[in-house]
Length: 255
Image 1 (cartoon, rainbow, N blue to C red):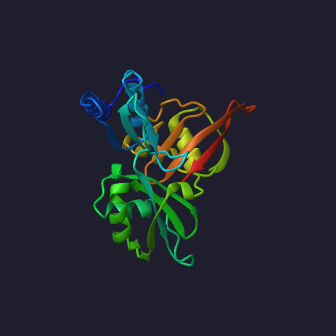
Image 2 (image 1 turned 90 degrees about the vertical axis):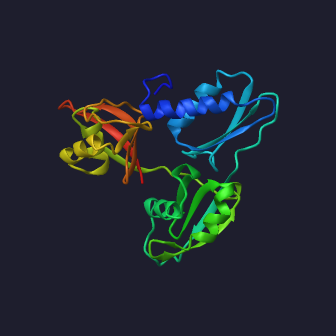
Image 3 (image 1 turned 135 degrees about the vertical axis):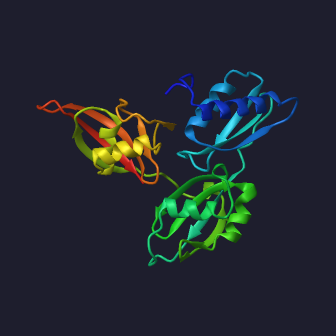
């Protein structure tokens, strides 16, 4: 989706804030954002491309990070990576399984804002990596003792020392009558169309990191659809039509 597409009021407000921060940069001053979601990153990079006097680095802890921090600096200077580090959270393997929502809830319950926390990656049962701003790492590490009712141990690690990936996702194949967002969500999450419509109208669905409220909105191959609290699906491939005229496609689901 193009940065120049119609902005929501929230996006306009954020972009105005970011533009003000750029206007304030003079001489050797630098500016570092909090964690940006992919849409904010897209808007920030579009704004920075218009300013030849500034350069920037973006970093979320690992190459595939969804949430990133931007560090802005004078174009003639060498830029450092933004101050992002990792908190490794470990728990006993025979304990109940912990998910992304459990970990995010526990970290935010410590008093952090959402934009002070980056990606949460769970590479295997019993351990997770939480990306945070370096200024908050010691606090998170010393304060996070439980996730739900599960005791955890935390340590600060250099993200470069971790082999992190978001994985390939769970592949889902099926057919839909059309590429409406409600049809795709129904297939991807195994929900009834009526429930999906309620979730969309309730503001719980985001396409390519932009909120939508219309169940009939058409999507395309390569689009990502997020359903708050349940994960996201990628429209990996539209494979053509069946004999009955239904659309055959392949999705990837990420929890």
